[in-house]
Length: 284
Image (tube, rainbow, N blue to C red; front, top):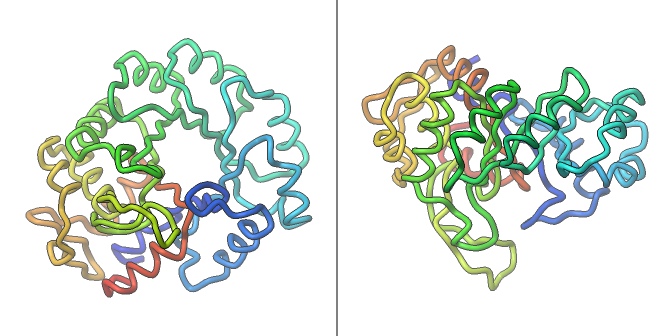
C-alpha cells in the first residue's frame, strides 16, 4: 500500500442522506452499495444513518442492509436498548455519533452504550471546554468536529481549528470531522448544489490530514494552521513512498498510524466529488 492509499483507506463515511445532498434513503443506500464496488472502494468507510430512520433503511436495502458498515447518529435521549436490538438482529453498527458537550451526559451515555461500539461525541470547534474533552477521554470516546455547513459562518477558522486539534492530540483522543469537506484542498466552492448557491472558502480534507499529521508527530498549532490555510495544490508532492508538504514528509506507515491513532476520517455527503478532485490533481 502506497502513501496515498494509506491516507485514504476507509477515509470517507458516506452521509448522502444529509445536506447539501439530502438524498432519499433508496438513492443513498444504492449509491453506497455502488461505491463499494467502484475503483475507489478502498476510500469508502461507513454508511451514516439516523437511529430513527432504520425502518427506511430496511425498506431501501432489504437483506443488503445487514451487510452495510454503519455509523448511527443518535440524540442524547435515544433509546439505547433499540441500538442493542438492532445489533442483535445482525446490523453491522460499528459507531454511534452523539451531539453533546455536557460532561455528565457524556459519562452517562458511555455507560449505557452497547459494548464494542465506537462512540463519537460531537463538540463545537469554538469554545469547547477542557472539561468536555477530558470527559470524552475519560470514557475512551472519540470526538466529532464540524468543519463547515450550509452558510459561510459555519466554517471555523484555520486558527480555531488548529487550536482544537492541538487540544485533542494533547489528550490522545481520536477524532473525525464532518461537513464542508468535499474537496481535498482548501478553496472557494458553492455551499449547495443549487445553481444559485452562495460560495465560501471550504477546508480541504488533505489540508486537515496534514494538519493532523503535523500535530500528531509533535508539531505546533501554528504549523497546523498553515497546513489548513494552504490553497496551492503545488505545495504538495506525492510519490508512492510519501506525501510531502513543506518541510514535512510522511510515509505510508506514518500516515496509517495517524489515521489509526488520531484522525479517523471524515463524513461527507458526497463520495464522488472527493475522488473526482483527487483524480483531477493526478493523485489517484
